[in-house]
Length: 372
Image 1 (cartoon, rainbow, N blue to C red):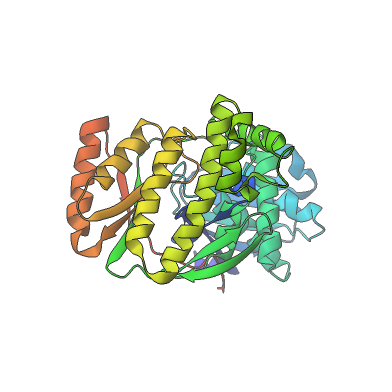
Image 2 (image 1 turned 135 degrees about the horizontal axis):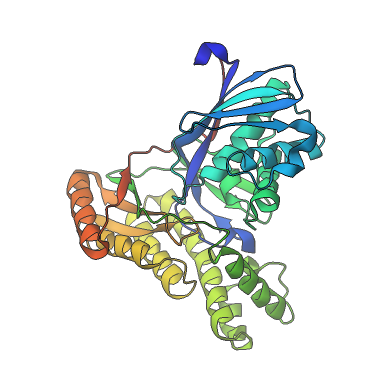
């Protein structure tokens, strides 16, 4: 395979340690890139066409570079077309090429397979055109592709973490300023365990865009009484003072955002100090808020988190990603990993009737480019 192509480019899937559904509210989030990634093998072909193949699909798709906007409804290749179009519209060269996709990020898992595909597509196109890689610009253009082509009104976290992840580090990503700092992920006697509840989710058909609209309603109301530009600017004290201006569900959505932003700050401080017990407690609190205030978990994720939280070797567990299916992450003592995995899988099957999937994944670099 390698000899037929000029470059191998990868972009990572991601987990978010804490800070869920606040990236689009201007908050700081705490993601890390995974060794599960999307790899592209690419070579220029001297035409005005992009030919797409997959290692896991029999399909082959050809995209005409001057008609990229017409591929929005493709079953396969729409994310690639959207990413190439965003790159082209930003004034960059898009060369005809052959691209072979090999994705190890499970689809519908909440580990950002779409971001990995979008980011790696742009990096691959930039690489064969000999363009400098500006990872921040690439993340922003990949986000634009997801919004305009896939119809998911997403924040910047997934694409940014996919592009900028660093081995054995998490990022504290300021979604308002679009800047980050790296925090070493020193888990000591503990490991992060990623478990998929195996209920596929589709963000466009889920409540994701509805939740965004609810937070935007809260912001418009609270802006009239507080000097804020985004919901994440609101302190818990300000929220408590003015929450009566918000009704019902809108108040609960805003409450989650305000307190989740605070949990990210506490979690980052805990990680820097090596206080993993506090980090675990914050994971549990985050899941409860996502379940009760934001209502994005569902019975499968709740069953998985509850099974993990009740295990003696686990100090914290929560859903990661947008919810409505996908994965949990759990902080588990290394000495009890196998006991934990066996017990949680059994309890989850007893509660739901089907099996979960446990991933062996490391915290890895976001983007890699290899000349073949």
